[in-house]
Image 1 (cartoon, rainbow, N blue to C red):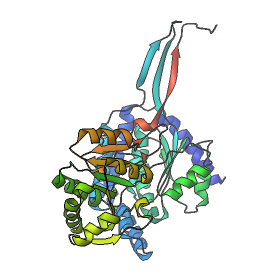
Image 2: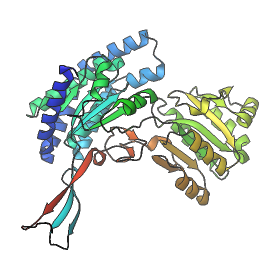
Image 3: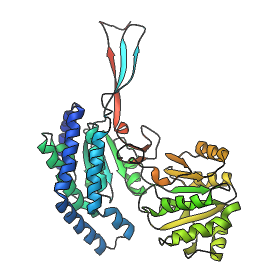
Amino acid sequence: MSDYLTEMGRAARAAGRVLATLSTARKNEALLAIAEEIEAQREQILAANGQDIADGRNKGLSDALLDRLLLTEARIAALAADTRRIATLPDPVGTELESRLLPNGMRLSRRRIPVGVLGVIYEARPNVTIDVATLCLKTGNATILRGGSETLRSNVALVQAIQSALEKVGLPQTAVQYINNPNRELVAQLLRLDQYVDMIIPRGGSGLHRLCREQSSIPVITGGIGICHIFVDESADLNRAVDIVENAKVQRPSVCNALDTLLVHTAVASQFLPQVAARLARSGVALRAEGEAHSILQGDSGGAQVMAAGPDDFDQEWLSLILGVKVVAGLDEAIQHIQTHSTDHSESILTNDWANASRFVNEIDSSAVFVNASTRFNDGGQFGLGAEVAVSTQKLHARGPMGLEELTTYKWIGYGDGHIRD
């Protein structure tokens, strides 16, 4: 283990102990200072991001990935606004989850407390730096961050703003630390820093998740990989369905809750597919269609580019303007397809048959399941959580958007009066 990382872990643990005892008012003061510092250092942050974007273009990064990397004046303003919004949210730390009086007269309660120190490993999207840092500060957790090399300058600039704000309000800068050395060995070492780090959260592709699960000696919460589906059944309002599919696919195609596969009931496929293809063609969406869907779209593609689906196309998180399309015989086949190909992130059914809606909700076991709504709503901000550290697709401790409560654990507190155990 390198001295660099060991010292970082030791400092994070010490900072975490300070954060754990802060009042809500002190934590909110820090958050508001961070928002102000982000705005004050806007030019430096944008300049650093501009260098990252230029390097990314030179390296041939895709437009989708460059969009994930990009910071703009509007996105900087949104980061500051999100930080201020987190300051307005209720603080879960110290909340009493339950209290009971035992038969022996001892009062027993469960109280929310911070997890401690979180290690978060992520790719692209420099906004994650702010989301993670601010949510962790609100819940009294220290953080060690490791972003992708493609956003190194942007992330360093953002962390400098955070640490400057922490210093101004008299809190340890080491409450939020960033591994700015691109050496991949440091990721492996972070995964074994169990003396200081309490939880690892990877945000990235399946390779990163697998690496963390296989090599970490620290508990890992995985999520953020979304192969997301919408099923349009025979009773759906097709005009609204076009709007919903367009929103789920086009609004921001490079994120994990964007639509990847569209399933359409055979009874409405010949009517619906040309309509939705024409709408998606306006935004340049290319379709990967299987079987009956391909035949229908060959006859009327609405101007969209259509290709026959390949053998692996329904196992792709596209993160771009590509959409898999399949016609299914009914709800049973739709559910079976989703259960086979889903990563348990976000799925939706568009229907006016509430028996179908109920079956879909009950049988699809993803972190968020929607009825007559876009998959894009599986998001901490949209759920009223302020922001999110990740969208967990596993089942232990946290599921779905990980907001404030999901960054806490609890301890038992017993109040006795000279009690001894028999």
